[in-house]
Every structure is written in structure tokens, then in C-alpha cells.
Amino acid sequence: MTWETVIGLEVHVQLQTQSKAFSGASTQFGAAPNTQASIIDLGMPGVLPVLNKEAVKMALCFGLAVGAKINKRSIFARKNYFYPDLPKGYQISQFEIPVVGEGSLKIFLDDQTEKTIRIERAHLEEDAGKSLHDVYQGLSGIDLNRAGTPLLEIVSKPDMRSAKEAVAYLKTLHQLVRYLEICDGNLQEGSFRCDANVSVRKMGAEKLGTRAEIKNINSFRYVEKAILHEVERQIDILESGGTVKQETRLYDPDKNETRAMRSKEEANDYRYFPDPDLLPLVIDDALLDAVQKTLPELPEAKRQRFVETFGLSPYDASVISSTRDLSNYFETVVEKLDKAQAKLAANWVMGDLSAALNKENLEFAHSKVSALALSELLTRIIDNTISGKIAKTVFEIMWSEGLAPDTIIEQKGLKQVSDTGLIEKVIDEVIANNPEQVAALKGGKDKLFGFFVGEVMKQTKGKANPGQVNALLKQKLGV
Image (cartoon, rainbow, N blue to C red):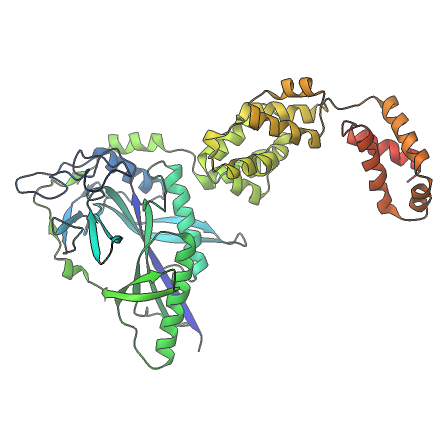
């Protein structure tokens, strides 16, 4: 029997505000446990929450970026449930009317196939605290620092049909919230995590199967593995004549399996009701217009512009536009060059520069070689002051010593030799010293041409102009 996978994701995006959703407590990560939970976050008697306006702006920013309907009047509700890391016994969230309604996000699969994933809603809510099960032997600890941190929960429609599609959607969403600078996207710290709703149905069926929700996955790789395992588990149950239970499950990466956590709650189980301490959230046109003006050029528009303006391949454009820091760096490099040299700039940014950054775990914003300095280096390749090979040596010194490319070229005597007479003299010596190779080359062993190029470059310590070397060798060897 052929089965179809159906996936919807609920992604929790921790908003990058300085204070919490309804209190002035700090959201900074890494503080000592239970030092950043205010009496408002703990729901002490008599306290009143006050909505963080910056969190609202960030939610609107996301909604506008995905072309969503913005609900100009939304309300906050209390979602009641009881866990040790939720001291109030309820979570302030949005239920019936979220601030962000239906929108969509375009994703690209590995083969560059496009697919549009519909977004059902994105609502504001506060985070719970965190239960720690690996700090004290035989005991669980509770850290309430995270309680009250503002979240934007982004709920997709069940439009994904494979684990790979789910990962592509998740990565595209991750890229977008970082572009918008509403979330740092740190998966290890839990700033970006998702719940995956997974079900299977017979191919061609319209009715959805019973779904299981896999909670709190904070790794792209684990999302894929968890979904693949869950799909296999459900198919095995159904093909054995069993029934899939609607439940919440956890993914164990060590055993690569999901296991039951609790039966899945329905909305009525949470006993939602409007929060009596919070007025409805009303968005006016002035605020929407102000947020609209802050939107950056979005990744897809930037990718398309790089293809059309700079002639980059779709792949190169996708890599270069993957983060704002990277694309800004690239554009600063290209500013000082001719547009025709954009491919050269892209190769260096994606190659030598990225390798150096990865080696030291640095972001583009903290590169030891500035965009202007790299542009100067590429200019010296273009004007034939140095060869591409010598440029790599110059770059290494720029990275380690912070010197300007012209200074390094001058101090190290690295200028390219373009004196035709001098190059001819070296070529004549190489040909005279290798008569057997000359005869073999003329006898049909074409690959030996590279040998002669290498010998000339060796004799000139890599400084000879490669183009001139190739042209003169072909002339003198008659090939």
C-alpha cells in the first residue's frame, strides 16, 4: 500500500526583545537560574501584565514579510495547564483572533523546485520556564528565567509531504526571522524550536490521518530524523491493523525514536478565556506603516536581484543571500569592482573568506578581512598586479596580520612578472632543458603542456603572468 505523509509545523520563535512579553525583566540568555523571573512572570497576587510594544512590532514585521492578513484587533487569552515550569498555572497567549492571520512562504527544495507553504497564523505568547533533568541525580530542577519571554508561534497549514520539505520550510523560516532581526535563530539556546505534527494517509485520500505531535525539536537534522521515524512508526501500526493515537511524543536522538509523552490536548482541554488583565490589542495604520518602512529587502528578492544584476547562478545567489551580513559584505566588495567581476567576488566570499571564518567560528560581521580590503585584493588580480595564486598568499597574510594588500605585495615582492622578454627567456630555458618532454608533447601527449607551465611558474616563483605564459608556450611549442 502507498502512503502519503502529511506534515504541519508549529515553530516557536523567541523574539529578540530586551525585556519580557509582559514585564520589564531581562531576556538575556545565560544568567544564573531563577534570577530573571519577576513577580509578574511568576503571577504573584495583585500584579498586572503590560504588553511589550517591541514584541508587537516584531510580530507585525513577520506578518508583513509573509504577506499575511494583519488583524487590527486581537485579544490575549489564558491557556490553562499545569506543569512545574509554569508557575502561574496558565500561559498568556492568543487563541481565537491572533495578531497575524493567513500568509504564505515560498520554499526551494534541493533540486530548486519551488513550493508555497501556507501559514495559518502567527500569534504572540509568553514562554514557560525550563525543566532540567540532567543537573541533579534523581531529581529535576526548574529554571524560570525563560518564563515570560516573548514568543511568536508560527503555525503552518499541513502542506508538507516529506521530511525534506519540512526541513526546507524550517530553514527558510529561520533565514527570514534572522533577516528581519526579530530572532537570533540560536537553535542550541532554544530561540528557534518547533513542534512537528505528523500523520499518514492512503495516497489519494482527502481525509487527514490521526496526527502525532513531536515536541520541542531544536535541530534541522533532528527534525528530519524524527519525522522519518514517526512516519515509519505510523505506517507499521496501520499496516498491522492498529490505530494511531493522537498524542504528544518526544524525539530521542540517541535512540533515534519517538516515544509517547502524553495524550494530545484539544483546545477545550486548555479552557481558554480572555485574559481579564489585558485590553484588546489594537493596531492602527500609523504603526503598520512605520513597521512596513523598517522591512529590509527579503531573501527571495535579494536572490533574484543578484541573478539579474550580477549574473550570478541561482545557486551562488542563494548562498550569497543566505544572511544579511554575508550579502552586505558581498555587495560592499562588488561596489568597488565592475559588475562583470561579481562572479570573482562571489567565488572569494564563498571560498577563501568563508573557509577562514569557519575555521575560527566567526560570522561575516566579524571578519578579520574587511569587505573593502578584499575588494582591494581582487582589484590587484584584475589589473594583473598579482596572479590568483599569489592572491591566496596575500589573503592569508591579510587575515593573520591585518595588513593592506598593497603593503603585503610591496613588502614581500609579490608583483606579477608581465615582462614578455623575461618570460620568453625563462620559457626558452625550460624548453632547452626538457627535450624528451618536448618530443613527447609534439608526439601527441597533450597533458605535458601543464608540465611546461608548471616549470615556468616554478622558475619565476609563481610571479609570471599565467596568461602570458600559456600564450607564449603555445607559440614556441607549436601547440
